[in-house]
Image (cartoon, rainbow, N blue to C red; front, side, top):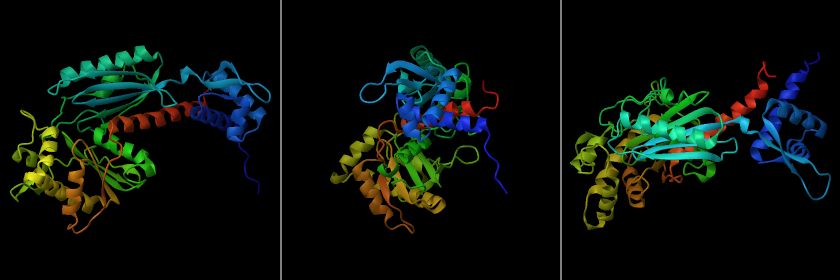
Length: 383
């Protein structure tokens, strides 16, 4: 019994996909170079390139190869492939970027915010950043990825109010704000989940060492946790998995309190806010050798959180991120205090420390944009 042969259209689309992916990995290639990279014959590649040029996905750059062998014209992805919008909303401000299929930031904008900014301030800031990116890029925005320093409803993408949430910017709906400029879907998630994805994307070079099962504890002005299981960030039914601020743990007086209350009792909150005063925490850590109990008290409190998440998530490793979570003194003290827990796992500081939430969101946006470009040649209604 003979197997069915693939159709001519299927073979053509597969060739075109190989061409596109080759050009995503290289700024420009001749047809001969594409054939060498893909292992597909030169005549087949030439036909595929011609069709992609007709579709507006590939352009002839007008440049010619030099050196030994027959000269050939260079081809590259067309600007019409579009870009992805990446947005980070933090207490410090709104950052927006337009990223092309190579991962290059084509345009960017930073709009500062006051720490007490609410929805009425963040929404205009988001619109301003968006407008600057659109005008600076000049290319279509095909999709969007948003990181927000607040809990995010999984279905609606709206920011969610939780008790004592320090950075709540009101009933902000990023999807609605971006809808006028972004053609396709807009994915919204909280910053801790994106930071965990950044560590995961670092692979063996990251603190998680390429693990598919780890917990990322974010200890900064806000408190958060991301659970990565079987290589996927687990967002929970409504998207609020990992909100650890209200987990019950051991407080400074040895009594059971919620984690967020530990900072209130130690006098480590910013005035008029539930946000943790990171600089003061670091200062107290530095004074630990002089008898300041803050380092031990916070290590004990976080150790209680560690016990809970280890029992529920069964991670291979726990990664510590955030402004004070990565402090060497704290990491060492947490390791010491958690060594007596019924179940212990390695505790390591995060390696991606520069805007990890933006790095994670950018990586996801790039992956989705590339898939969207490639999907163009798979459409049954294509030209």
